[in-house]
Image 1 (cartoon, rainbow, N blue to C red):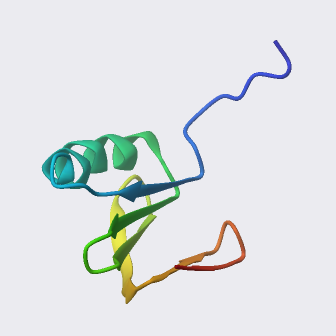
Image 2: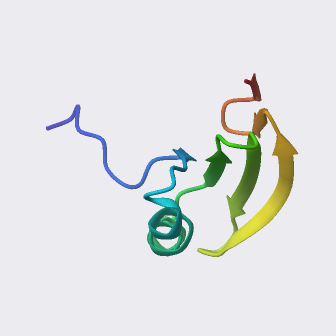
Length: 81
Protein backbone atom coordinates (compact mmCIF):
# COMPACT_ATOMS: atom_id res chain seq x y z
CA UNK A 1 0.00 0.00 0.00
CA UNK A 2 2.87 2.39 0.69
CA UNK A 3 3.89 2.29 -2.97
CA UNK A 4 0.56 3.56 -4.31
CA UNK A 5 0.28 7.01 -5.79
CA UNK A 6 -2.55 9.19 -4.51
CA UNK A 7 -4.05 12.33 -5.97
CA UNK A 8 -3.98 13.89 -9.41
CA UNK A 9 -0.94 13.91 -11.70
CA UNK A 10 1.25 17.01 -11.51
CA UNK A 11 1.06 17.57 -15.26
CA UNK A 12 -0.84 16.35 -18.28
CA UNK A 13 0.08 16.74 -21.94
CA UNK A 14 -2.98 16.26 -24.15
CA UNK A 15 -2.48 15.78 -27.90
CA UNK A 16 -5.63 16.66 -29.84
CA UNK A 17 -7.14 14.79 -32.73
CA UNK A 18 -10.09 15.72 -34.89
CA UNK A 19 -12.16 13.22 -32.92
CA UNK A 20 -11.39 14.35 -29.37
CA UNK A 21 -10.72 18.09 -29.44
CA UNK A 22 -14.05 19.16 -27.92
CA UNK A 23 -13.89 16.51 -25.20
CA UNK A 24 -10.27 17.36 -24.32
CA UNK A 25 -10.55 21.14 -24.42
CA UNK A 26 -13.89 21.41 -22.61
CA UNK A 27 -14.84 18.34 -20.57
CA UNK A 28 -11.42 17.02 -19.52
CA UNK A 29 -10.20 20.58 -19.00
CA UNK A 30 -12.77 21.13 -16.22
CA UNK A 31 -12.13 17.74 -14.63
CA UNK A 32 -8.37 18.30 -14.50
CA UNK A 33 -8.89 21.85 -13.23
CA UNK A 34 -11.20 20.74 -10.40
CA UNK A 35 -8.97 17.85 -9.34
CA UNK A 36 -5.93 20.09 -9.01
CA UNK A 37 -3.68 19.08 -11.91
CA UNK A 38 -0.87 21.64 -11.62
CA UNK A 39 0.11 22.00 -15.31
CA UNK A 40 -2.00 21.16 -18.35
CA UNK A 41 -0.74 21.35 -21.92
CA UNK A 42 -2.99 21.06 -24.95
CA UNK A 43 -1.07 20.32 -28.15
CA UNK A 44 -2.61 20.70 -31.61
CA UNK A 45 -0.49 18.48 -33.88
CA UNK A 46 -1.77 20.16 -37.06
CA UNK A 47 -0.16 23.53 -36.37
CA UNK A 48 2.08 22.43 -33.44
CA UNK A 49 0.43 25.04 -31.23
CA UNK A 50 0.68 24.50 -27.47
CA UNK A 51 -1.68 26.07 -24.95
CA UNK A 52 -0.19 25.93 -21.46
CA UNK A 53 -2.26 26.26 -18.31
CA UNK A 54 -1.23 26.55 -14.68
CA UNK A 55 -3.64 25.71 -11.87
CA UNK A 56 -4.11 28.40 -9.25
CA UNK A 57 -6.72 27.63 -6.56
CA UNK A 58 -8.40 24.99 -8.76
CA UNK A 59 -8.69 27.38 -11.68
CA UNK A 60 -6.56 27.10 -14.82
CA UNK A 61 -4.89 30.26 -16.08
CA UNK A 62 -3.39 30.23 -19.57
CA UNK A 63 0.26 31.11 -19.06
CA UNK A 64 1.42 31.00 -22.67
CA UNK A 65 0.66 29.90 -26.20
CA UNK A 66 3.72 28.65 -28.09
CA UNK A 67 4.59 26.79 -31.27
CA UNK A 68 6.44 23.45 -31.06
CA UNK A 69 7.60 23.87 -27.46
CA UNK A 70 6.42 22.96 -23.97
CA UNK A 71 7.94 24.81 -21.01
CA UNK A 72 7.25 23.18 -17.67
CA UNK A 73 8.07 24.39 -14.17
CA UNK A 74 7.47 20.88 -12.85
CA UNK A 75 9.88 19.28 -15.34
CA UNK A 76 12.20 22.28 -14.96
CA UNK A 77 12.82 22.48 -18.66
CA UNK A 78 11.55 22.58 -22.21
CA UNK A 79 10.37 19.96 -24.67
CA UNK A 80 10.76 20.92 -28.33
CA UNK A 81 9.12 19.00 -31.14
